[in-house]
Amino acid sequence: MATTTLHEPDAMTGTEDLNPFHIAQRQFDAAVKYLPSITPGLANFLKRPEKVVTLEFPIETRDGTVLIFVGYRCLHNRARGPGKGGIRYHPDVTIDEVRALASWMTWKCAVLDVPFGGAKGGIAFDPKKFSARDVMKVTRRFIVMLGDNIGPHTDIPAPDVNTNAGTMARIYDTYAMMHPGENNLPVVTGKPVDLGGSLGRREATARGCLFCLQRALERGILDGRSSVEGATVVVQGYGNAGSVAAQLFTQAGAKIIAVSDSRGAIHSPDGIDPDAAIEHKRQTGSVVGLPSSTELSNEQLLALECDILIPAALESQIRGDNAHTVRARLIAELANGPTTPDADRILLERGTIVLPDILANAGGVTVSYFEWVQNIENEQWEEDVVNEKLLKKMRRATDAVIDKQEEINSSLDKLQAERVKHGFEGEPLEPVDLRTAAYVYAIDQVSTVTLERGIWP
Ligand code: NAD
Image (cartoon, rainbow, N blue to C red; front, side, top):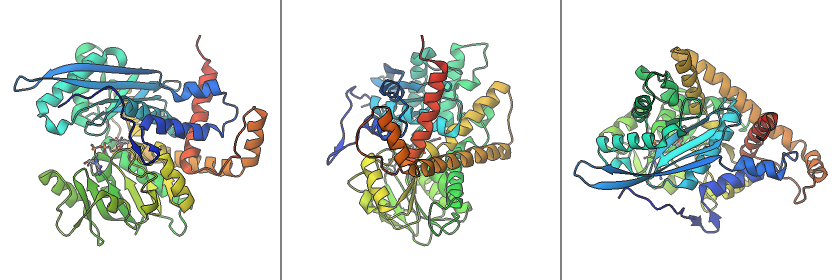
């Protein structure tokens, strides 16, 4: 059945609250402590969404059945520019997941210094259970009902889980039907290259993650390893982000020893050929069964000894109840929200480095921004130009986050004194991980712009 209820399940594991929006707010609260000049009122504004639209709409499938679908679009913050964020098709989509993903987009765009705010959308259904024609109807109906909640200068969608360039082409086409005679290409990014898409966009999320990791290793965040060459890598999730990461990391000299998708995981200590895994998934629907590999459970995959673990599937994969099993030295978050706050605390204690999503997977939105600029200027940049610009953005952002972590951790007493001066009480400030440093950097950017503009009216 393609419908979902409107209530949000308060998923709990043990004592941990896995509601994604609660997680996003906990992350925000943990960071804003390091920005004592931000008043509680401003903080409250920054962590809440500006707008959430819920739409319920029918589709008549080929056999004449009428089904109701529920979709959401959330605009979190537009202080720095129009909303930007993907559209997800997945049965577990909830209003709070969309809120969380939208807020992560706000912080991500600020970390990368991309002039967008944060937004996200989703429809709660499993497109794999429907014909391509039914999925197209769902897409078109959703976009028509969203109406001017999206637009080239207000809120610009992009691909996410179970949506791709083809979906973006439908979104563009539907929106263009509603706005004839205008340049509508910048209303959506991640389009096919022959329809205004940017060269390099499909690979951008994974490529940005590689650039980020390379820079972080050069900066010495992992003792004894200054490059990805020779590193052992595990990838959870083998879709757009994960499979391309496996290819690019292999090209950079790393060895992929395990990968997974929603149907299971495979392991090969001698290395997995990423192209063979892609082909196997294309033919069979899963990476499971790839010749010369052994099958693993998802939990076993996350617990494999390796240099780098790349979660590239969904939220809350590494939690308080399993973080202690992770034996990777570094986690590069290609997915959004794969690590919960309880897991972060455990990983920090154990010395596992986490390159956070709002930095490590920001290559996608960065090249989406390049696509938007190309569309507005009616240009098509060469792929090496796109990749070179992405490299610069990712290196600058990675440096900014590492510098921020160093700055905070070397001035904890001073920050604590400022907190007291601003009337805050509470526990002494602890050293921060890279996620909190990235948040502090981003919140500072967004709050500065908010105050420059002034709270209207
Ligand atoms: P996708 O639909 O192309 O791929 C998702 C993959 O995860 C599929 O292989 C699926 O089988 C697998 N998967 C689902 N549940 C799983 C589970 N429990 N265990 C293991 N694998 C599982 O989606 P995508 O675009 O690659 O997005 C993946 C993640 O990356 C999401 O968190 C998304 O928000 C994030 N992300 C994507 C982009 C982008 O440009 N596509 C940009 C930034 C972040």
